[in-house]
Image (cartoon, rainbow, N blue to C red; front, side, top):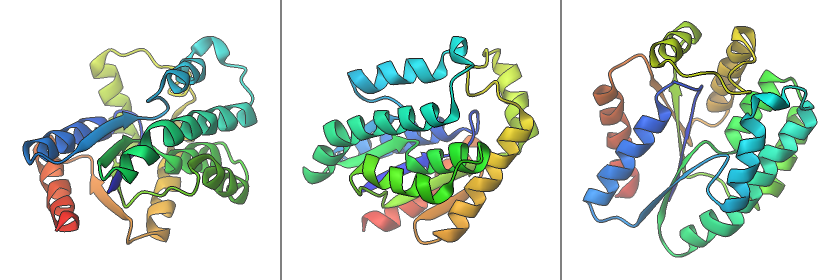
Amino acid sequence: MFITFEGLDFSGKTTQANLLVNCLKELDKPVIFIREPGGTIISEKIRAILLDKQHARMNQITELFLFSASRAQVVSEVIRPALQSGKIVICDRFYDSTTAYQGHGRGLHLQGIETINKIATFGTAPTLTVLVDVEINEVIRRQRAAGVASDRMESIGKEFYQKVRDGYKRIADAEPKRFIVVNGMYTVEEIHSEIWTVVQQRLT
């Protein structure tokens, strides 16, 4: 089983992914957790390049291919072998992030991105995708409350993030069987309960 978590930064998706991992471990399920971009030595190095604010002049196509290169490495090195061995894989972001951010957010060609996504993942698709949806103003509030400096991607601006959020909704609407959309404005416990209920149903 391959479960991915999607959403804007500070949506709470990483918290929810970790809570799910802990629940599965308590049931002695073989589970691994991966973040994107990242998950391998090569992928983590690419991540550092992508998020470095010194690279503000990075071309949008360069950005697209770097994210995809990182993904290709982690899929081939970690995700596919884990799935083939019967493990549950939980991934914090996957190709839907590229479609939402580089496609809907940056305005790059969606069909081209779909082709690149298929190549970079070797055709690997999530069994279930959890989209944690949060309003843009709440994302900004949470970032300020956390006192966390913006990385290169987070520094793009409110209008960009609204396009990304709208893009995520379109992606989820197009694949209702794969996606569950949870309200990120609810409490951590309420969101986790909703996700855990769905996952338990899928495991049976």
